[in-house]
View 1 (cartoon, rainbow, N blue to C red):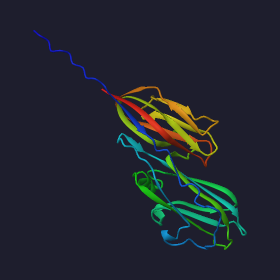
View 2 (cartoon, helix red, strand yellow):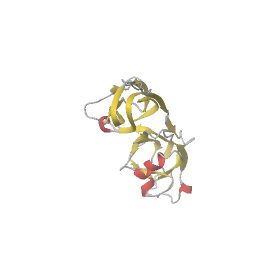
View 3 (tube, rainbow, N blue to C red):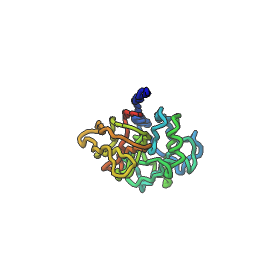
View 4 (cartoon, helix red, strand yellow):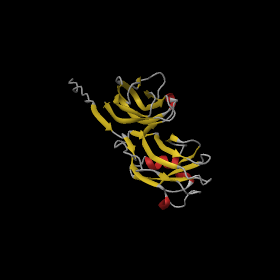
Length: 260
């Protein structure tokens, strides 16, 4: 009796490269601006500043953005009253669901604020920013006490990442795969603290790798050990930092996949 030949399938190797990097409005104030409005202006056409940004999204459906970090810098040069400068930032529309920041400043100098967008938190904005299209940020300033504060910086950043200092549970990107997987990439921070990233499968007792970003620079490169995922598994990239006004984010990520 002739036995049929033994047939084996060749594994399939793939590499996914995703480079969302950092979006930056740059400083929207070329010199200084005196805020004379005593209440928030109505209509996006009356915003003090506007800027359009486009966040790059993954081209492969096995990658999913889970969190987008934003950071706002405003420098108040002077305030001749009781420091009552107000600021609101909206995305695309001027209403509560599209409001990214709602701030009251009580001192002069550089003021830093952060806001993460994800499911359940600023969800309308999160769904907008992760659709791969351009979205416009509208900045409104006013001073109810007519104190005419002067500002010299208005700048906003956005990235796939996090501003959280509780890094162990904060997922910014998810990869879904069955088979072997290895992750490497460049990860950065905007701010002054130390960032952390962990690459963790959502299966009990199986951690691919966890590394701490370089404490002396703004960037670090990590590479995980290869891991075999015997069933369809979600891999989470978890971010955190040491300073509450920093954002830690993905510059470029490389994912090598093997499917049998």
